[in-house]
Length: 304
Image 1: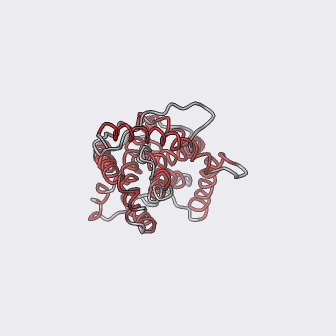
Image 2 (image 1 turned 120 degrees about the horizontal axis):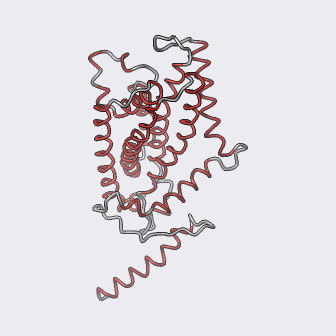
Image 3 (image 1 turned 90 degrees about the vertical axis):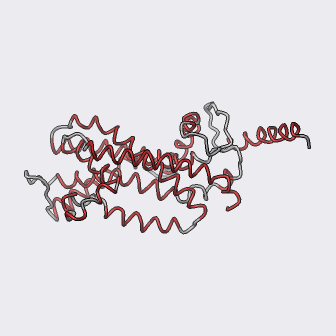
């Protein structure tokens, strides 16, 4: 077949495939679908912005589907953090009487623990989901025109959206217990940007590796448990022995958790030196993860 005729046939095939790919995510509201590229490894991450409408549609679909059929529906993202805060307060402040700081306030540790668990829950949910997100979408993998790189990102955005109501509950609890909200909370978006970059990069890595190594989903359960205890969430960073303090600099989540507490509870700005370190690491992991995913995604269909 001549080259021009082959190219024309290929273009016609893609045009026929595109409606079938998008029909699964069609809605009553018109959505502008941008031209989908071939997903070459050289495509920059900025291309994701061009697909923001498709990403938003898929996030909405996943978020609503998560609570479809439940009695309270989308109220669960608000009810869950309230229930956990009550549980933490009762267990650690009333029963165990754990206190932090010089004022001996029984409310401190409950808020301290919640501030640490919020970013960790976002990371844990995203990474656990990412190991199977490609395997659970075999129909999309076989569609050459569908941008598979947005699937891990949808899980990350959904996890962040689940975190936002819990942050609101933490703000309210801070007002109730401390009678104020620190102005340093305005630094929180900076920390969230670094957090999203870090989690997105890891999600791309794990989504790709999960296709080739099916045991990754089980390994991640153990790895996340070990990583959580290596992060100062249920204990202060000063509890680590002096010869292990260097681990805080090797663990980006330690810096993120610490800065959450600095800006929300302590009224201090982020630790800028630590912030520069974990933000740089997050950016490198994000760019490398995106490139790794784009390099490997073309063989997903063959492996699956």
